[in-house]
Length: 177
Image (cartoon, rainbow, N blue to C red; front, side, top):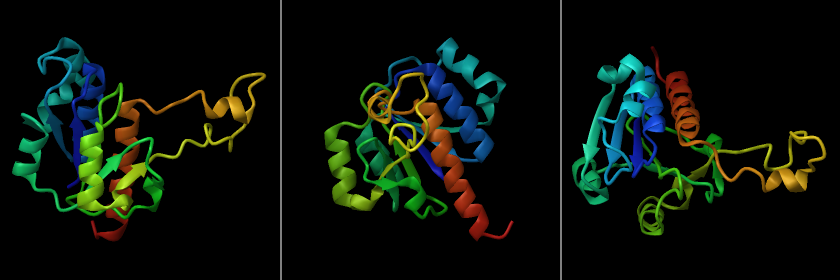
């Protein structure tokens, strides 16, 4: 099983959607406080629909409590500043996929901890071909140069789904069913 880890999520709708993804993948969802909403928030429940009871969700009081209880052997930090594509990583059962909050990602101290503990190869990014100028410009009159600066990052729920399903794909093709 993969572990999806949200550090200080701010938007209940994203967390609800991520919960649905975790349930569909059979992943454990870790939510690290403080968070920007009440876990009983109606928006989180609405986004999770009637699947929330299927979500294997563990809440942690803070980052240190998460580290103390989980003691991750392999942890991957998804960040727009990562130099390595998630498609170059080799995911294994039991890996932890860490995502920061919607407004600013992971704080510098946590990023430094991941770098020191798991190495530079643990800092991953999700390629965005449209922002790299590899795809045709989306808007009339846009050029690759303007397209490059138009999208800073993906929505958190989208990023978690991409990473979670890539991890699942890799693990399921290596292990017999």
